[in-house]
Length: 580
Image (cartoon, rainbow, N blue to C red; front, side):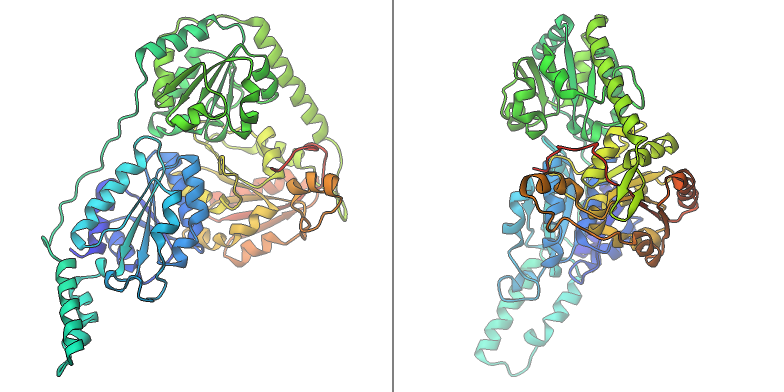
C-alpha cells in the first residue's frame, strides 16, 4: 500500500466519517483513497474553515475531527483555527502536506519549516520520514488528541510518502537512469537510490489497528466525598459548567442527570449552553457575577478563573471546588479550596452519586430567580423600543432574536460568530438541548461560523442549523455558502446587519472619540449567498421578520442554504460592554 492508501485505512479504522480539505497536489492521494473507503470528502474554499469544521465535528461527537491541507500556505492558513481548537480543548487531527523528503530545505515549492510554525499550537507535531512510519504516526495522533486535556495534533506527510512507490521512483528516474553520467551525477544517483530504498523499506502492507478507547481521568474518592459534603452543607451554592464538561459527548445525558441530582443553581457557558434545555428549573441566565459574589460555595466545572470570571475576583469570597483536566486551568489566578484534577463529566457524576436529597434553600433560590425574571422583563421592554439605523428605522436586534427564539425547533443547533449581535442572542435565545450551541470559546476569534455550521450540519443532517452571524464576522467565511450549496447542506445564516463593528464601537467611540475603522456598509449579503448557489432573503421591516424566518426554515428543510440579511438598528442593550 502507498501512503495515501495507508492514511485512508487508518481513517477507516478510526471511524472517520468526514475529511475536510482544500485540494492540493501534496495531499491528493489522501482524498482519493479516503473517498474509496467511504469517507465523505468535504472540500471548502479556505483551509481555516476545514479545521473549524473538524473542530465542530469533534465537539458534537466526542471523536477527533480530521482535516487535510496542502503544504506551505495551506498549513499557514489553518493557524487561527488550530489555536482556537487548542484553547477550546477540542480533539482533532490536522494533516499537512509537504515537499518530498529528499527536497526539504532545498528551495522546493511551498517548502517551509511547518513544524516550527505549528508546534506551539498543538499537543504534538509528527513528521514520519519513511513509509513504514506513516501508520504509527497517524494512530499516535488520534490517541494523543483524545488523552488527558484534548487538543489538536499535527501530522506532516511528505508527498513522496503518499504516492505509489513506482510513481515516486519514476519522478527521479531521469536523474538516476541517465546514461553517460558524470562522477557527480553518479554520486547523486547513488544518493537518490539509497534514499528511496530507505523511504520504501519494510513490509509492503501495513498493520492497521482499531480506534483506541480513551478512559477518562477518574477523581480520587476522598475528594469526591468532600465535594459532596461541601455542597450539602452550603446555604448559597452555585455551579458554573463550561465546555470541558461536554467532552464526553456520547454520554452527555449522564451529565444532565448528575446536575439534576446535585440540584444547585447552575449557570452554563460555552459548549454547555443548552445542557439543561430551555427553562430548566435549575438553570439561571442573568446576573451571574452577583450570584458568584454572594455564594458561599462555587463549583467550577471545567471553568478556569480567567477573564470570564474577572481573574477570580467573582469568586473571591466563596469556597471554590474546582474540577478540571488541566492543572494550569485548575489553579489559574485563584487556587480552589478543593481542586480535583480529573475529568469534569466523570467527577460530577461521582459527586452526584454520593449526594443525598438537595436542601430546599428557598431564600437563595428566590433571590436568584427574582433577578432572572427582572432581567428578562428589562430585555422584553427594550425589545419593544424602536431601533434606528443610519438611514432610518430598523429592526430591533433584541426583537429579532426573540422571534428566532419563538421559531426554534427542538433539534436546532446554534452557531455564534460575531460580537455585539451574537452577545445579544446569547441573552435571548435558548439552546434547546445538550450540544446545541457552538461558539469559538476562550480565544474569542471571529470567523468560526461557516466551518462550525458545516461540521454541525454534517453531524446532524436532519437538524435546523442556525448560523448567527454579526455582519463583521460574516465577511470572514461568507464564500462557504458555495460549499454548503455544492454539498447540499441546508444551513441557515441569520446576519444582524448594522453596518459596523459595533462591539468595538461601544468602547472606542466613548473613550477615543472616533469611529475610525469600525464603520461598514449595509452590504447585500443575501446577494452573495445567491451568487454562491444558496437562497438569499433580506428583511428591513420588523413586521416581516416572522414570515422571513419561516421562509428560511422552509427553504433550508428543502436542502437549500439560506442567508437572511436582517437590517438591524442600534440599541443601548449592551451599552458599556468592552471588547478587550
